[in-house]
Figure 1: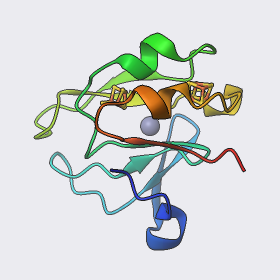
Figure 2: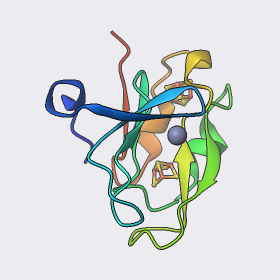
Figure 3: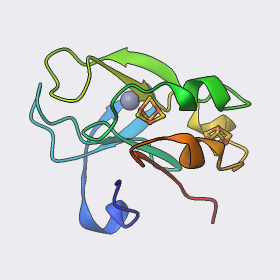
Figure 4: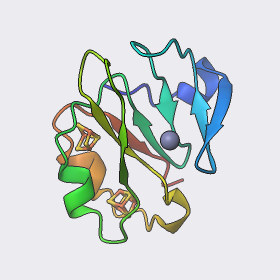
Length: 103
Ligand code: SF4
Ligand code: F3S
Ligand code: ZN
């Protein structure tokens, strides 16, 4: 599962589509965590898609992750600023790849 303390345990190494990327990143095998308020551990995501289907405000978009061992696409929290903290995505992800900091 995603580390809920990732902000303490990791460092930002990049920016992507307006959100932070928390390392370590070593492409293509290791992609880190994308987003902060809505955080997706790309190294855990298996592209189940439930988060994209269920998010009421369309926070997520697919991004390609060729040659990643878990899946060739990932759910990117492109619109994390729109999140209304409903926690649906956290509940439906089968591999617990998502952390939402509802404060
Ligand atoms: Fe979307 Fe709700 Fe997840 Fe926020 S907590 S990203 S609104 S499903
Ligand atoms: Fe990935 Fe979980 Fe969404 S596996 S696509 S973050 S439901
Ligand atoms: Zn991203």
